[in-house]
Amino acid sequence: MGSAFGAVGLLTIVPVPAATSRDTSRLGRAAAFFPLVGLLLGAAAAALDAGLRQVLPISVASAVVLVVLALATGGLHLDGLADTADGLFARGGRTERLAAMRDSRTGAFGVGAIALVLLTEFAALERVGSAERATALVVGATLSRGAMAEALRWFAPARADGLAAAFAGGVRGIDAAVAGAVMALVAGALAPAGTAIVALSLALGVAIAVGSLARVRVGGITGDVCGAIGEIVFACELVAFSAGHA
Image (cartoon, rainbow, N blue to C red; front, side, top):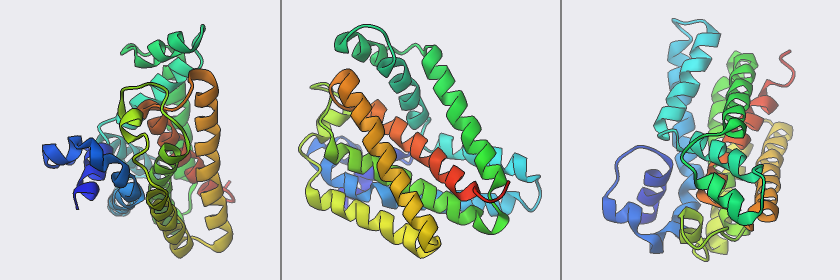
């Protein structure tokens, strides 16, 4: 139960016992619960979306849902996306890039990354068919958080401190396997087989691509990189579900 609370504390603004959220010995096991937290977030977003569409235009409902999802995570994933973009594309060597990633000021790459991802999410969600919106939100939120867990298992941390370092060696094979199983079960249960395969492939592909880029540029991943993976995967999933609704 402590690991589940740890996942909730890391991925949302929901208050959890302080000792649980800071206990690094449980962080690795918490990764197994990442997709379940995403499932809950997606279900809440889908319920909100269904209600909003009764009284608001679909474009406004889409915008509100995305804003609420960002608020539910405390904006941490978007902040991670911005920091990752600033860091990975900064000039200089590994040290300078890590310093740029840790700089509290958001640079041009960071602003651009947030704008592009949010615009993509909004445009895609607005085009998803009414009957598929709940599935898109639930599957997207589940797989985006699951991809973060897989990345923490696959890639070493870029620095000796920080969130990714706290997870280093703590995410066991069984934790990653459980996260992967939840991802597959949710996608397979809610989406058609072909769509589920595409959704899973996108989630794992983005995690590998972004993680590999981070390894080349800064020597590994950070908590910011994990947040970036989550946001990019979510955007890609919404795009996948919007396909065919041009």
